[in-house]
Image 1 (tube, rainbow, N blue to C red):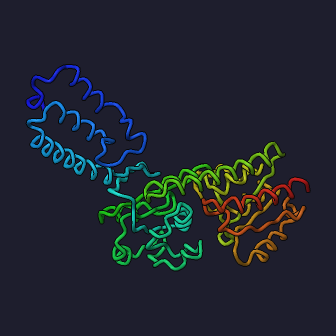
Image 2 (spheres, one colour):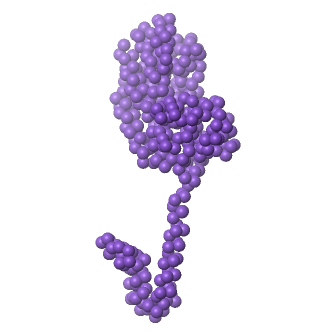
Image 3 (cartoon, rainbow, N blue to C red):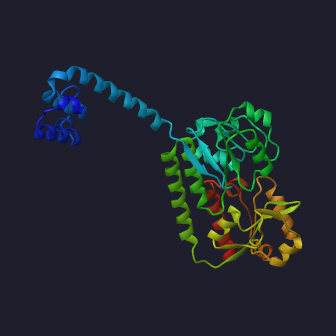
Length: 350
């Protein structure tokens, strides 16, 4: 460029540079191509004025270089990698948003749909039954018995695994096959919002996932405020009766019991879920017993009538809530939470 502008007065050079580095007035007024409205046209027109002898050769080369430079920059923007960290502290990097996703837990399937990634789901575990569209997905087994041949045949570019639910051996086996596995977990109820945003990030649905996350957080806070400061109620949550299973303090159901002003009588358990003895339940004397059965709940609750000394039995504070609404760490937990809080409130005033 210097070679073309020898002998050009400094004032002219300064004007050309200012024209190039400042917004073009014509561009601001809606000027079009070739009318001097673009920065490139301003620069070239200025150079043409001061370097007319060599103009044709310079202009042709300059435009070729400029266009080539822009074309080189475009792929850099389009192919920006996505890097996230899972609940197991393992980094997952995707070259682009995942387009073929398999879920290994019903919670994760729901979250993927809530985050806007319905069209990218190509497979799920046997228990993924919500939303209705999820029931049509090809099945790859459950968390403990994954059909690897069928899973690989679906050609996933991302697999969602549940922290504390999907066995570590299964995750390691999938990664040994060079498959991308993102482990997602829930420690606090607010993590549900984080998980929505995380899935939105890896699937290219950030805006939709963010909206779903904010809606969930608003509902959670409203429920928290409604029951804040109420007298505590001892609650026993029964996953199953034979064997007698319950939830530990880190499980999302236990977190919801706390939000309702209840106290999980087995919150001291380190496991997310564990077997307990009947004697230990009777000794802790729950004021409310809640089952998560989707079938046979009446018979299970009737069994508790055999121990009239238990506070919950004496006051009739025996309740059933659909396991899908409380056990799954998804936005639907708010539905189960509203029912749970109402039941705990009933036990509170008995």
